[in-house]
Image (cartoon, rainbow, N blue to C red; front, side, top):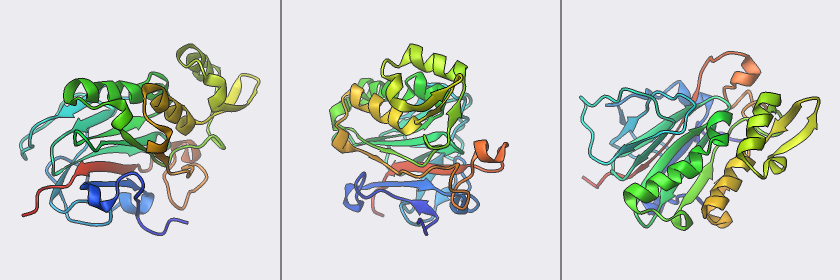
Length: 247
């Protein structure tokens, strides 16, 4: 069982890579102010003297690209569900409570991305669209990307209805491989499996994809869950960033 307030995945981004990352838990969320201009003061998986950037999430597929250094006066008005940066010293963050946090790292081009993927964004292809944006803006090749899929509502618990299933059938040809227990217009959807298959289809090697196989609905001691609690009482924060230069 997880004992630390955040989860890191060494196979995704080892310490020597110069990439800092974490998937947060409910124990971590209470102690982190996620807003532009707040320096992160160390901690497991977190770069000392980094800035945390979080934006409004709207369950879409648009990504905000940060390709310059930030200042305390910067503000980003609008809504995005992915953030991409090549700037050291910026931790880009997403907030989830059943949706999937996806962290991406290109070790060749030194680019990172943080993605918030609910069922709408996942079915609409936010992950491959973010890959394509990383390629067009920074030259990142999908086969070079490393991907880590964080804690989210699992296929064990995440039941969806016919409108979701209909959208899935129309948008994803291999839809039958990511659902289970279909009956009477309902089924359990495995969002992690959907995102993994989309990443592989986009060109990422299966060996470069890791996942934290914990269900946010099952583990009330570790995670907030909108589906379990019926309302938003808190969100987990997950983030990734290139380590800032040594002072």
